[in-house]
Length: 273
Length: 273
Image (cartoon, rainbow over all chains, first blue to last red; front, side):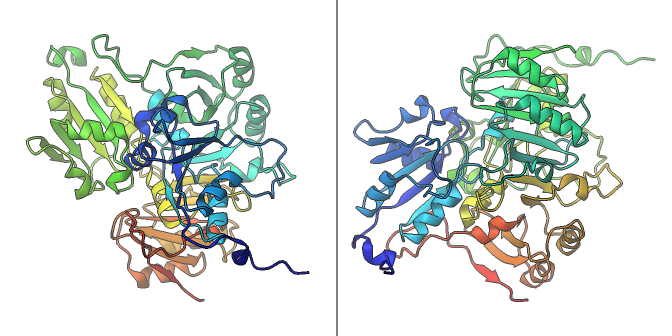
């Protein structure tokens, strides 16, 4: 028996609107005006674990908060969007779906938007400051530089989870800056692979943990040593890994004891080989 | 005769602080809270041509505005930072240096930060929504997607201007999404080069002109046809070019006549070959 078309199974009446909102890298000051506006007037906010307390504190007290954790072991072909989000929207209630960084950079925003469109639920995508941009600005490492890089690639260290082959080679260009999202887990392996792909072992690398948050920490090394250094430093996730000559162009502002800064100084550890 | 150290030639006394601020892709609603806060209380704002009127309208009326145009024919090794910005800072006046998108992605923020540090002028880098992220969210094209791309590369179509060789090959990975900044000028050439590098001629391409602004326009095609289509469409710059299977995953929200949206619908033109 063919199931009836989806449309006929859905409740009639007005749909709520789903806002797929980038929460930025962590510092609430790096929210966009649009994201801030939506948050402070939200009735329902669904957020994933990458969104911090400082940002959730902006949500009105009487709003419903739904923690939408990454569900390990979930079938990759299962719907990306959380059932409770769909439920609210189909009942006519607007939902702010808050995602770390930008919803369209490793945020599954594309997959969720496709499902919303299929269900004829109106939605809007609000761009955010992706984690790499926040980490770069906070640590003084430019992502492109006249003398160092005319491109920057954002990639995950792991291949997408439905691919069987290791396709890191296909995702990383020969030159230019590389930012690995969620790259801390198997960093020694990834660094070795990048060297085997032709990046010099002396290529500078920065790990930025908790970028733009008060708990931010930065570890500087090179491809040959960073895996071991990271294991010793035991940095907290989420962390980003920036690979390339731009790391050597890191600029730290001169000390300014009189001027309080909103972001704390990065703790920098340079390993000598 | 050796010139005296730079420090001794500089005026003593307190320096002003320079804020290297990302203005985002265009829509003022995509400014960060931090950028907005700095703008509305600025005494001096130096901005480049990519920053639009809507954003400059936020600057207080009595503030000094300095247009810092891209100076064609400038010696590439000349200082990146504008002399008038340095002058104000050395005189003890804070300056907001406003840049389109994010200051560390093709914004020369790294070069300017290096100069500020050398002159012991305090500075702060404020991350912004890079143009690619704004264009993606506004047009419904995810930059990464489970079924289409696990990486995204931002590159300029031209090699950096001090490089003599065409190094596009070195900057573009075999797979994944590619976003070309300032890619409209020589698009036919670039598209042909990407095909010669192994990207299928049928690879979908989107050009997004004036992303996130009321004048936004989108043109969809593929690598084999986009150069000709762009020439006919005569899109306004600045424009971004998004290349990759993610373009086929573009999701446009269902029509919602009752709900006014802050961003206008994209005008889409699909060329049939």
